[in-house]
Length: 149
Image (cartoon, rainbow, N blue to C red):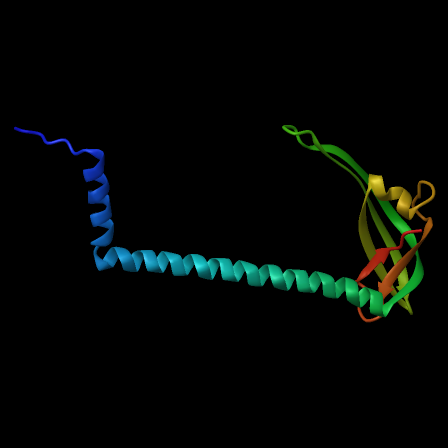
């Protein structure tokens, strides 16, 4: 048997001809895959847009309909741990729960504050039963946050 070895130019020509003369089934499969990819990217963009809109609407609504009041601290938990052993990422924050009254309705709020930002909110370390200043929405009292000093 005589084996014929193709040189680089012949291999390139064969690849080009195989690409040009592909059957229609291959082309339709590629078109379906391309359309599926575009649809997935479009859906992801829509979801991210809606989430960003809801986030900014919530903070904007709190600025427009917000009312200041005092709340009582009901719980404080300090987290300090290494989140990732490989790169040394650490979590160091305070989880603060509080309750306040909106008219006669008792509401419960919760906020996480990074340790590095703690001094922006409080002059000294707070304790359970301390009073803090918060901002809550008069339309939706579940939308609330601790105010910076």
